Structure formats: structure tokens, C-alpha cells
Image (cartoon, rainbow, N blue to C red):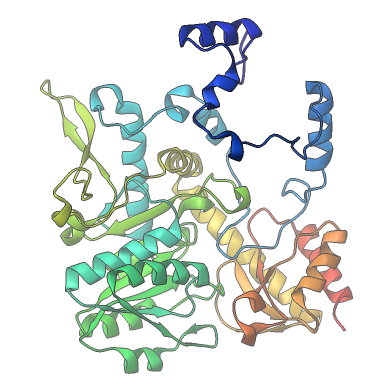
Length: 448
């Protein structure tokens, strides 16, 4: 019989206790003083038979507003996108979901090739030359990019646009504090980075300038103009980018970005309450030996056959500690595989079509909301997110929407008091015309 867990019979328990010379389980805890042992009854429910327990848990789970039955208009870094069914099929293969770090290439060619393909596709999307085998998430990748920039330039000041995801900025500040790096935010104007303010803050002390494309408000930043300003002061240009958006937008590599990072959650990775997801990290060739984490390289064996190996691992586990550029000790191989399978299933045309649908449907929603009397906080080109102004708290509106079976947008007042009563709305390719129209109608009913 196949079990999803390992059952233990009373006989199993007796045999194990006999093997280690113990009479009962309580003897295993003799090292713990009696005075600190808990002797009461735990305040938990009595055990139930499996069928009754499954029924109870199912009824509790049914109270959740999940994405299968509730159209979602919340994004802010984690999005509800189409996931090809083949993703779960490949991930469920035991050789992938039970695999550990592929230190032995002779028995890990399948996983190594999958990671290599992930790196290749990330390079194609971002327009960069080298990509690593993934990072923990987009926020971690952004912070690591800043640390790499500081180490490469030997400078201790980083500029980050206030249109970058606020949680990523928090992660950056945490990293920077330990490295004694000063983080300065560039204010935004009309929902994009204030170029004039950026010019004033630039100096030869700046290690890097970090922007997001599309940014946290969904707007498209003018990367070409920014790149000229950044490189004129010999700073590094770091761009955090939604890889799906790059199916339709010009990639940052074409604008001269030094490092492009982001989160691959948009490809085949479920929202999953915010994680785990999969960050990516791409650079130009001159930074190849400074990339955190690990890279998979293509080589040939002694018989001339193509093969794959881990290479250029710049972490202290593999090289002298004083030469290490990062303490990142792993990657998100399984989620990177999910992203690889999704991108492969979609293909170049599919990724572009998916990206274009995000733009078109978001613009349809924008126009319908305008017709309903709503005001857009920031006008101008955007990808699949935009900001609308409400006349009552977003929390109140979202509660009303949830009663109608709709998951509303993100409350920007949670991160910025100047944006109280402002909702960040995300419209992905999965939202139908009917769902968008219903969302607009229900929002209108909550609009005075």
C-alpha cells in the first residue's frame, strides 16, 4: 500500500524502543527536569477519526476566499496568472521534487539541464548575458544586487526609487544596515521616478541606482533617460522587472542595465499566501564572477557529449570566506523548474500574447472605471496595474467586495499615508470581461 506518510504501529514502536534499550517513550525525556515538564492537558480538540477530521478541515478550508472561485484584482508583487497544467505534472515527478543540490553532475543531469534552461530563458527575456540558477525571491535578489554593486564600485551609497516595491526596499535596508551602506530614496512624481530629484541626488559616491520596471504603481519607467544619468556618474544601473511584462516591453538589457532582477512567480508558480517563490538575477558578462548563488554551465564530457555542471559559485561554502561575494547558500530549484516548464509551454509567442492581454485588459478596466466616475491617481502607460482613488477606506470597500465574491485591490494606505483611500488594482490575463464589468459595477455601488 502507498502511504502519503509513514504509519507506525504499536509493534513498530516496541521494536524501536527495544533497539535503543528504552522501556517506554517517557524515558526519552529523562534529561528534562521534572520541574519544567508540562503535566497538564493541552488545550486542543480531542482526536478524531480520519474521515471526520478530513470533513472538518474541508469545511474550514471552504471559508477561505480562494482564487479558483473568487476573481482577484489584487497584485502588488504576487499575481494570479495562467499556469499550464503540465507544470504540476513535471514537478510531481519524484526525480525533481525529491532532488537536493546537484553537487554530483553524473547523477543530476536532468535537474542541471532544467536549471540551465531557466537561466537561458531569463537571459532572453531580460536582454542580459548571464543569469544565475535563481534566488529566494525578488526582494532578496534586489538586495543582493545592491550589495554586489557596492562591492564592485567600492562605494557605500545606494539610490532606490520610491516606486520600487516597499517590501523590497525594506529587505534592501536590512541588508544595507549590516554592510554599513546608506540607502536613499528617490521621490516619485506622477507615479514614476522623479528624474530631476534623481539628478540632484546623483554623485560620484553612488554605487547603484535601483528602479522597478514596471514599477510598484504599474507605471513604465523611462529607463533610457535614467541609464544615461546613472552611468554618467559611473554608478551601476539595477532594474527590478516583472519577467512577464518583458514579453511586451523592451528588456532592461537593451537600455544598458548592469543588473536585472525580479521574481519569476508570474510563470507557473502559485500565489501560495506570498511564497515561496523564485527570484532571478541576471547580469552582463563583466559581472559573471560576482553573481550570488550558483550558476549551471554547459560543458562536454570526456567522450564529447554535452553535459551540465555547477560552476562559478561565489559563496563562502565553496571558496575562501574573504573572497565570497554573498552568503546565499541555495536557490529555488523546484520553483525555477516550474517557471522553466511554464515558459517552455507558453513559448515566445505565448509569453508575448499573455503580456499583451495583461495590458489590454488593464486598460479596459481603467476606461470602464473612468466612465463610472473614478479618478486615476497616476495617468500614463502602465502594464497590468493602476491606482484609483476611492472616497472611503479601501479596507471597507474590500470587505464589501468580498461579500460579493470578489477579491479587491491592494490598500496603498498601508504603506504610504499620502495614498490613503487609494487602491492598487491588478488585472491579469485570467480576468474575463464579465468579471471586470462586475468588479467595476460593485466598485461603483461603493462609490459615493
